[in-house]
Length: 193
Image 1 (tube, one colour):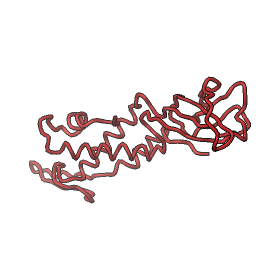
Image 2 (spheres, rainbow, N blue to C red):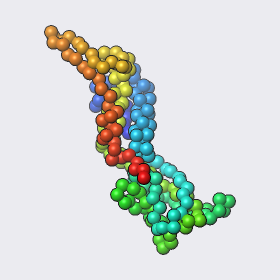
Image 3 (cartoon, rainbow, N blue to C red):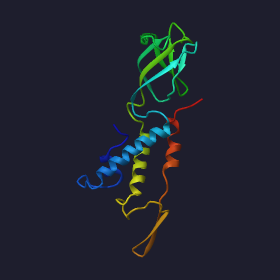
Image 4 (tube, rainbow, N blue to C red):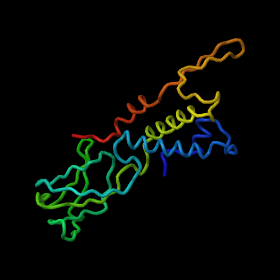
């Protein structure tokens, strides 16, 4: 799954007919690049993804998970020694959110300092927030406009383009969407302490 689709980019953002397939493969590659870049900016999975992490106990009832995006618990297992078998303790655990941090609560026991815990969960949004989708669309269009497929040819490195239309000079200045996108993605970034 991607944050956007070729069909949406072509019809809603670039006004390219569905029957025109000349740039389809390139648009698909741009979408894949934007998906990876947004996950990198957010520093955590954006789309729901299976993740496994091993943590040590902290002697408290709460373990802070390394994600701020939604977490759906699959299994929690424990073991004392690295060569021991894992024991499932999922029924004793539940996820919780404090501010923007995702936490794992264990009842009735605390997270033992001497134990390892393996947590398997789905991390990320099952329905991608509209803010993220719009950012993805804008970034794909920006990348597309830097290629030879864009109207007016390649715009890579060009700060402005001047054209004369019906006796009027029209100046176009291309700007990077990255700083705006990064600001708008701040609520979806992983919080580090």
